[in-house]
Length: 451
Image (cartoon, rainbow, N blue to C red; front, side):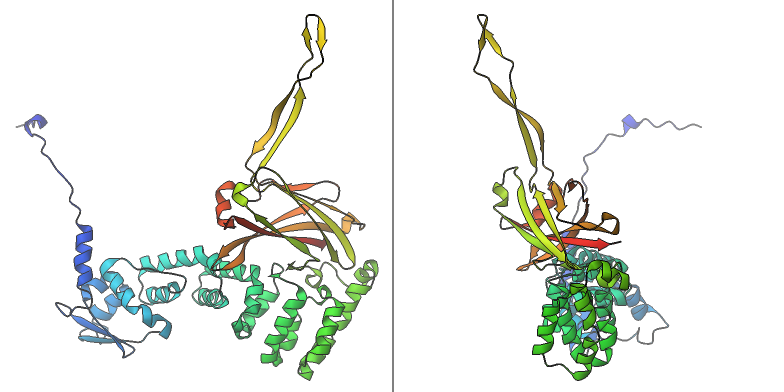
């Protein structure tokens, strides 16, 4: 027997999906740390006590699930569970446990590390992943040495490779902040060596880096040789080093180790380049420039009144000196875009068979776009182009927590024979993050690289 159902016989009725999720969350959050119906008390470091519900914890944490329900965990049946946590996590324990009831927690650059430690320890995957994403996104917002280094140390310990790389990059690009911090001498030896091996350190000069390293060595004199090997002494001017050695009281052992390296300082700054390269490998790291901010290596550019700019160029020139070789750099930058027009004369007009001698000019737009074009050329370079090349480094800065920090570096290889350019230094959509109080700050560094 075949049953035929006519849909028309079932009239549609009004319906509505009710969503009382927020109301339910509110009810659950009110149960946190309440004795009513709680079935376990958590005691942390013998000082903090929280009354919680097993069900709320075990459904979101595999660790709590094992602790509170497994027959293999001896304390699982106890009404009181004692936990030991790191001191830095204690101020956030209440918020962490309340997260199990609400799904909400506020994190900041100050609190995200303790929250990640707790989420990792108790295997709370959603919170852990959110903390990792927050840290990775906000590395460039760090303006304090201790935050950057602690994040980096933690990332290395927990094998968060992308976060470690981001921290390393931020620290390298803001090395002056690092060496000026009171905690500088507490930096670990392995980390210091990794930093000194980098060529992308943004620092005032090799001499300022050298002085900071000497301060560190005074705390750890047995490591002086290994650390001093990473200083690029050819980049230091003899006068700076002589004045420092003459005016600074150093441990005799440290002083003798520095004196062993003085000869190359004088040779690099006094011996003709052709002679120097016969004795040394000038393409090695010790002859490779870092990102020096000193005036003999480049120039800053501060653009005020950014929001009222027209599409006009900003011109800048500076001279660099490296191994007695001088190079002149000329830069043209269009911060908000480039507009090019030409004047065109209309055809001669005839009036009643006579020439009309009042020419009429019209303006034709050849180019009009929003690309922040950067053009650069070099001059006054007498060396053979086959043995070296020039690179312009553009250090882009962002303002955060009362400090301008370097957050990106663009590089352009500059030809000896013609102007080189970056088509769009800062895309339009990214420019707002580089502007603070109507100002943009950039620093240009000129490099000579030996082949």
